[in-house]
Image (tube, rainbow, N blue to C red):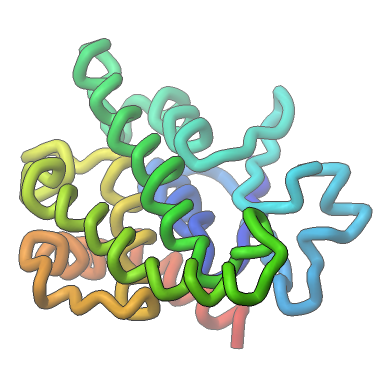
Length: 209
């Protein structure tokens, strides 16, 4: 059985949904970020980065969404969560997920994680002011060029979709009106109707309450 460490409201939701979509035998272990549980000695033994997600497998521990999502797709090929028989198409999947991880998430993190990059309060305030612009630019690119529709890669649902859905849930908090992104909004609606998404969201919200 796999064990996924997550915290509500974090990017770990993407891997959580993918595990459910794949039909994996797993247990989700919630961390309390308000209690700084991600920095506890016990968790740092699992993931020295002190972040989520972390997936415990029988071969060791994986971290970082792009890696975990690719692992899930490759381990459960019958779920058809990625074009595994087409190296170029699979690289496109990896490219999209890498953009969410390395660019979109980092832009979002400037709102509340400024201490990663600066020490002055004035710098934090400047970072927060930039978030609607920087994240907005990222999503404009996704809306107008990267989201093929109806799913990210086109007709086939892939591991890109739970990841985009997860990051899209942060738009309102980043002061971006999703109504200005009709294709992203449609994608969010499609995702919210999937049974796996409903199950995972229900479980995360129930445990967070």
